[in-house]
Figure 1 (cartoon, rainbow, N blue to C red):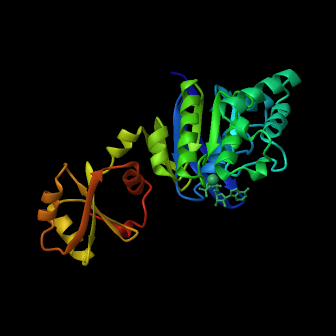
Figure 2 (figure 1 turned 45 degrees about the vertical axis):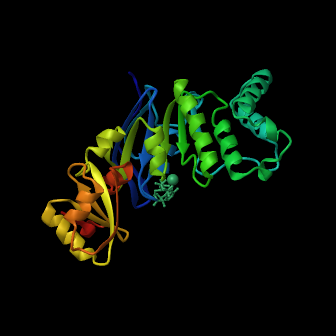
Figure 3 (figure 1 turned 135 degrees about the horizontal axis):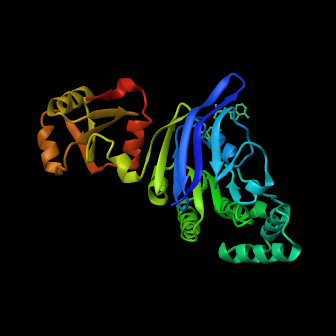
Length: 309
Ligand SMILES: Nc1ncnc2c1ncn2[C@@H]1O[C@H](COP(=O)(O)OP(=O)(O)OP(=O)(O)O)[C@@H](O)[C@H]1O
Ligand SMILES: [Mg+2]
């Protein structure tokens, strides 16, 4: 495997506001890496740096072996960027939007027309050939937005929240398109706030906090960093009693946004859990294997005062 992206000890300030503080990340060729973290933690800043749209103050960035430290057409011609906000012309047709962006890459007129036809077909945009983009649904606009980022056949594709604000069906359709790109060998760096999406799409995930990557690995590797194999979500009239019982049982307990989660050191049946919590006025219990959401809450964290056990 070759390394597609290597970011070492990158620092970025906006004036006196430090956004990246020793940011490290590597992506192997052919991977889909998901960069996850809270609003404002610096994800889009990282993507802008990778796409050579933003300078950085310290560190090193190598994309497909080439240093990224100045604007360079050579690099951008191999990179596709599907930005967080759709950048389409609402008064133009889908094909006209694609043609506009294809021309920006300096393709010949024949190549432009051929590429536009391919993308219209691959993304099944034919049905909307005569619909102005402003009249398309949000899901179809997002689909066209993804198609636009592919006009230059990028080897390295950057997707900033590619499925935010689209419905479930549109999201699943976009996932299939992204899977197809990976199967064709495209390396992908994406961000998302939707953790099941990262779990579904990504070969590795990097979790970000305070301008740094705090944990990176495959989903199973990140799940192994939680203190249990399963999580019981519990509702009760007396949270204190539940939390105290969990501590007595040696089950790590978390209280996030009003929800009590108990990490089970080994899988237990619902009956065994209810018996263990007997006398604590439990009104509902559900149990499920640990998910990326549990790993995220553990590793990116919330208010430390809510973490017990
Ligand atoms: N051009 C800029 N000038 C000044 N500050 C900026 C600029 N761009 C981003 N910031 C600040 O840098 C921080 C990181 O922003 P960034 O957009 O990278 O976050 P993000 O992780 O992508 O957030 P979100 O999940 O909301 O998209 C924020 O505090 C933001 O306000
Ligand atoms: Mg962002």
